[in-house]
Structures are given as C-alpha cells and as structure tokens.
Amino acid sequence: MNCEELKDMFELYALGVLDDGEKSEIDAHLARDCKECKRSLAHAMAFNAVLLSIGPEEAPSKRLRHRLLASIGYERPGWFWAGALAAALMLVLAVWLGTQERERSNQLADARKELLQVTGERDRLNQAAQFLSDPETRPASFGKGQSAPRRGYVFLHPQLGVMLIASNLPAAGAGKAYEMWVIPKVGAPRPAGLFQSDGMRGLHLLTGPLDLDALKAVAVTLEPATGSAIPTTVPIIVAAAGS
Amino acid sequence: MFKLRLIQLIPAVLFYALFQVVLRREDDPDLVRRLKAREPKAMADLYQRCGRLAYSVILRIVRNVGVAEDLTQETFLRVWNRVGSFDSERGALTPWVLTVARNRAIDHVRSQDGKLEANAVDLDRLERPGLFMDLDTSALTIDRARRLKSALEKLTANQRTVIELAYYEGMSHTEMAERLQQPLGTVKTWTRSALQVLRSELSEAAVA
Ligand SMILES: [Zn+2]
Image (cartoon, rainbow over all chains, first blue to last red):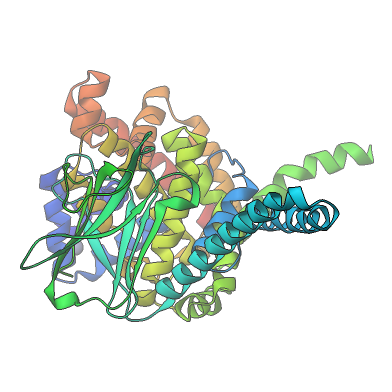
C-alpha cells in the first residue's frame, strides 16, 4: 500500500490495535524512514492524546501523590509523619509514665519498638530512593512467558544489591511469607530475605554487593513464615538478570 | 445577570485550563531536563501537570479506584525510569504520559483476561520516547479541541462504540467484529468513518 492508502490507519496503529497485515504495511514504511508516514504517525499520536484527554476527569486521592513521590525518595508518605508523631508521643508518654511508675516501664519498651519500626520504614525508603537514582542500577525483566505476571519491578545494582517492588501480590496468609531468591548461573538458589506484601512491605531489598555476571535470575516464592533453605513452591516472580 | 455570565464562562475556562495542560510545550524542555537529572521535584511537577489526566484515563479503562492508583504510580515510575532517552527539545511530554497511562491500563485489563504477549510487546514498542518527538501539538488549539469534543457527541452510536473499544479497550477490528457480532467490513467502515469525522472536524477548524 502507498502512503496515501495508509493515511487512515495511523491512529489505530498508534493505539496498537491494527490487525497484523495492516500493521506490517505501516511498519515497512516506517522502517525505511518514510517521511510522510512518520509525519502521519506524529499527527496521529497528537490526535490520540487529545482524544484521550477530553474524557471525564476524576481526581485521584491525595495519598497517591505521596506514595508516588515517596517511591522515588522525594516525600515520605503521609502516614510516615502520622506514625512518627504517634510514636514520638507514645515515647514521651512512656517516659513520663516510666518515671511516675516503675511498673509501667514496659510501655517504654513498646514505644521504642514502634519508633524503631517507623525509623526502619524511613531508612528503607531512603535506600530505595538511593537505589533508583543510581546510574548503575538496571532493571531486570520479568513476566515474559509467565501465565500470570505480577506487576512490579526488580532492580539490580553491583554494589547495592537487589530491590524488588511488588505492587499487587496477594497477602501471604497466616504463617506464610514471601521469600526472595538469588539464583546464580551455576549452583543452587540462595535465600535473599523474607517479606510481606501489604502496604510498604511489598518493597524488599537485599543489600550488599552482587556479582551481576554470575547472576541468572531473581525469584520469589511463597514459603513458611520462618523461611526455607531452598524454594519449596513454584516461583511467583522470576526476573531474568540478563539485560 | 453577572452570575449567569460567570457560569457561561466556566466551560471555556475549563477548556482553557485543560489545553494549557495538554498542549503547552514551552515548559517541556526544562521539565524533561530536570527529570533526566533525577530531580525528585521534577516528578512532583510532572504529576501536578498530568497526574489527574493520566489517572482519569486509567480509571476509565480499569474501572477500579485502587487498581487505577497502582497503575498511575506505575505509569509515572515508568516515565521516570525511561526519560533518559526522551528528547528534551523536541519531545511532547504529556502525550507520552497519556499514552503510557492508557497502555498500562489496557495491558492490565488484557493480562487479566489472559490475552498476553504479542499485544504487550506491541504496546511497549508504541510508547518508546522517540515516537513522541515533533508532534504537531501547537496546531491543536483550544477551539479545535472543543470541536473534537462536540464532534464526538455527533458520532452515531455505532461509531462511538468502536472508538470506545479501540481507545479504551484496546480492541482490534477482528476483536470488535467478534464482540459486536458484525461483519469485519462493517466494523472497519464504522471506525474509518468515525475517525474521518473527528479528523475533518479538526482540520476544518484549522482552516476557519
Ligand atoms: Zn509511507
């Protein structure tokens, strides 16, 4: 087909909905750098964007903005401050109670524990931010050839290690946890930490240097909450390390 | 009297605001440069500019608030991670974000339906940063976009349906024919004529 005959199809091409025959016609023109078809495609892309943008508008929750910016290390999510404030207040209260009454001192321990946990979350966010912003970080692909890919990301870094963000894993369930595995090209999978899927806990890090050349894949399986020495279930996520 | 006039002005003001957001490119080079420099504040600005639009497109496709928020986050992280090869001088950022948003949502719905691979690869290919260079967004004025919106309302029910299926469900002609129980040729005619109406509405406005 010539450029003129293809003209009507670029919007659908840009949407990825053309049937194969027509698609490959356009691909052929674009592959030989056909100026007219490139123009048509640019025009169709602008057209599609405007068409998409004139639909009804809905506002996302404020939480989404916090969550997004937290994921790149810009802002801590709102609940962090709420949590930190609550923990700080509890600590003050506990200190006061502790000096008032000796037997209340266990509250102090509880508050300390909570404060540590909140601090831990913050540190993990900072680590994640550092991970994402480092030029040496590279993503590992996953989902290919799997019947039910999960959404998420796996990032690898020769010094920082592995970062996994799994955004839609179901809850592991009572007495269970997700376990990450580092699978070398040669040898058995190595356990790389347990994590849960709810809230920020879908973010999992294995820190420390990683030999990327010897790495075959990163995988996740569902295991007993105490963890396993070798994977005992079929992996839910397998991210191949080869770029 | 004064109140009534103000009310009449609201649609025009809304359109103006919307197209400032969609089409304005003056700030793109700077914003892209800041995104490339991994300035987190740039991400906040990008979200401010088109977070709501991206979310609206996604929500319309997935029809679930929680999923739409997850996918919006995924959209912006994808842009953040791929902006390195985006052309700061010639690229149009908002069309890119909207395309990624739409494709992520379509991909999600389709993968839940068990339709995978080929389509996912194709969508990925169609959101490469290089494709969003030199878009003729300046030619699309507020007036022309308003016409596009009213032209959409003028389409026949069948024409509107096929546009909806292509843009918001990611269906090919073959899939539409199956879904609508119509001959392939009929579905193609509907789509083609619908796009022609919308396109000519835009170009007429350009001439006027
Ligand atoms: Zn051509």
